[in-house]
Structures are given as structure tokens and as C-alpha cells.
Image (cartoon, rainbow, N blue to C red):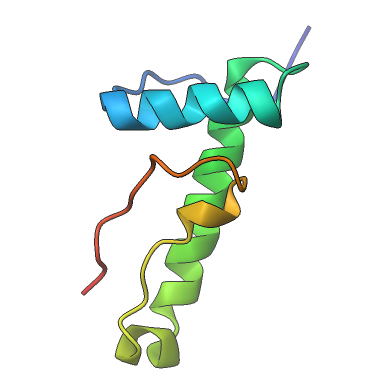
Length: 81
């Protein structure tokens, strides 16, 4: 089955793994882990785009990982400068 998706390997911290597992249990229980990580990557890209906005940068924009799911509290993102 042809696909336009690319494969790559990703090393993650134990904190990200724990958060992804919790997200899988609560929001993605019927989907594969690849969907969880695609979702997290998409949220990270959206956050980066928001923070690239000059107003957000002046306001010391931080990652919005709490938006992933209400039950996910173990993920953290570095402060953007």
C-alpha cells in the first residue's frame, strides 16, 4: 500500500514517553502510537509557529503541551527565547 508518509526514528525522554502513554490511554486508546506522536509533533509545530509571531515572542511564549489532553501533565517544553 503506497503512502506519502516518511519514516524516521525518534529518541524520546522518559517524561515524553510517560506523557505519550497517558495520552494513548485517554485520547488515542483505539489508535496506534504513531498517531499519538504525529499529534504531538503537529501540536509542537503549531506552537512553534505561534511563538514565531513577534507579539508572542515579546510575551515570552511557552509551549502549550497542556492542550494535548487535560490528563497529560508530565510533558514540558523548553522556554523559547
